[in-house]
Length: 283
Image (cartoon, rainbow, N blue to C red):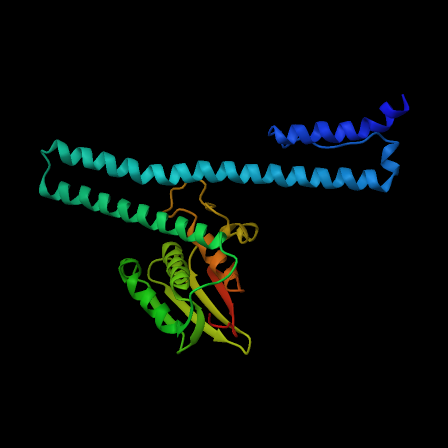
């Protein structure tokens, strides 16, 4: 009887662990009232429940990731297939053919950009040491990215305002280019037509800060941290263009460089800032 009583808490832990192993992440460990007087028992239950909560949260994120990923990839594929079928049927005017081909081209580029961001995000998340570090002109790279997106900001009649001087930086040139493209593309997408698109570089003894500012709808305070989550979009209906991956890439690349990414919003101004540390050794 004594052995059975003393082993009861152990059996309780084993049963709870089995439940977690079988995918029931809502499992929580609670010892009898008398046992909670012992600090070790309290520590075990708190640690177990914390682990279960983290697993439950991870499972929710995984489920959301799969659902959003499927939605974002399915939408352009359906569009491409539908318009391709219409073209194959024939009996279309030249104007209709051009319009349908334009949609197919846009959706193909959307899929390509999405695949590129997913691959970059996977690459960065699986990388703990920054490689391919070279010294390059950061200002020139940002100007080139702005030119690459000229079609988008010209269409909205935005006025680029680049206060970036000439700044050299030691980092992964390819990954940082994706950062500026994603930030600029995001700013253009949510900017009010006819407003300024501002890019500024500020240097300190220790850091280089790049800020991209647009005028348009503000981001609610409670969403400022969530904007960097994978596949998170402020528009839950997914009516706005985008896939919710670009800003995740931005944050991951900044952190891989030992820096950080954050956002602020107010007065119809939204600013995304990247802080990159100086003093990196080229390898």
